[in-house]
Image (tube, rainbow, N blue to C red; front, side, top):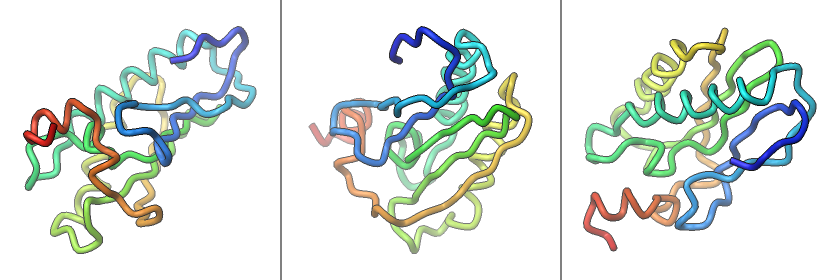
Length: 138
């Protein structure tokens, strides 16, 4: 995570990440949440997202690159934008709730909203090297 000298709103934007980068932090907007707390919440949210797996793929959804964006508002509403490996995924109706349920217990998060999108479409290029290794794709 980038070093921030002032309190900023935290946003992880994964929509255009390079193959090997696990996350990019978008330019921050002003926030009333202290930087140290934002850093802790960000780490805890990533850890929580890493507990959710696509049942057909033995890799968590974060490493698969299914999480496009995570944004924490000053009112502590966590907005998660995600996709699926394919629009016809058999768990399309369930996975957003799994993501919601994983993020809700994170200390410092008051509310979680999960948005499922299909643009841009997911491709294997969005996976981290860790995911590629786990799937023998390196």
